[in-house]
Amino acid sequence: MAALGDARRNQVTAARGDSPRADPTRRADIARETDAAFRADVLAGLTARPRAIPARWFYDRRGSELFEDITRLPEYYLTRAERSILSAHAADIGKLTGPGRVVVEFGSGSSAKTPLVLSAVAPSAYVPIDISGDFLRDSVDALSQQFPTLPMHPIEGNFMHRLVLPPTIGTGPRMGFFPGSTIGNMNAPAAVSLLRAMWETLGEGSKLLIGIDRIKSPDVLLPAYDDAQGVTAEFNLNLLHRINRELRGTIPTSAFRHVARWNDTEARIEMHLEATRDLSFSVDGHPFAISKGKTIHTENSYKYGPRDARLLLRSAGWTPVAEWTDREELFGLILAEARAVPAAP
Ligand code: AVJ
Image (cartoon, rainbow, N blue to C red; front, side, top):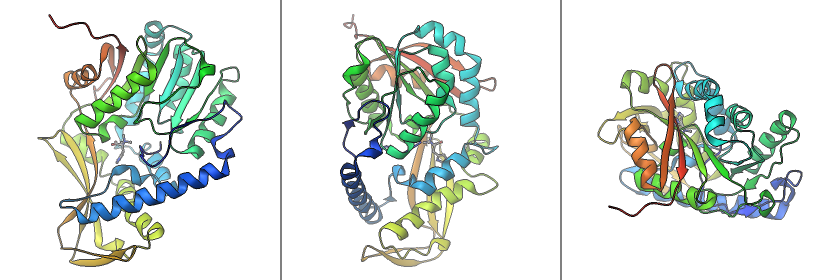
């Protein structure tokens, strides 16, 4: 998957064949905006107390590769659980959505989940939205092999805001697909505004199929974010390497260690980078210091009980209509509908 970013402008690209990569001027603009936003977020995040850098900056090329590796770790149950739910309940999902919907995937990754959904719901078109044009092109290329007659209209843009869908997809019913518990990176207000933006993008009468990771024992949660092979540690530390690479940083990366914590009050996993000694360094010429034991907060991954998840959806105008889980009840897949909200009694 690629990150949720603010730096990139929404823009509707032409249909398949006209890759977002095809416009070099626009790509250069996007790269410049992304650089500026990364620099601003890092400088502000290192100046703030507590120190915090938004999780979306994990996903440079190396970070995206490391995330793919994470999804294959024995401890990282999320991807496997969601995929097992999708394959076990594909027929059910298809029955409830009906054929001929336009499937709009938010943050399309190189995920193995998309084919399961496309087979289940027999859509009339597929619209993947991602801020990474590279990822979009690759996933559309791969999916075209498997679904040669399905029209595909990739959109390179930021789905945090309302998007205009390409008119060529028609006015037929739509279904959003938002897998992977990506919603977990946002706090409640941000999650609600994202779900509302999706409602606006898709329109009344549309459906949303969303994967949300559940609250469970920290004995299961913590290893998923602190695996034995150290892949998640490398993923977290890659942020510091990225800062050094892209922002002329002098951070002594080996003096930081990966920390994963379960914050029970907030119902979230937190990832931090902890200084193992008193340090000073510079980023883009700006000096910074951090004392031993202090951290840079790099990610939140909120977890939801089944009722929490449904309340979150309703708060954004989505009415839950069905819900599935895996055998161990680790992960929830919810189908919701964009109904007009009836007047309160
Ligand atoms: C992509 C946000 C769903 O929170 O589980 C995985 C990111 N971070 N391991 C998650 C992540 C550390 C992942 N999401």
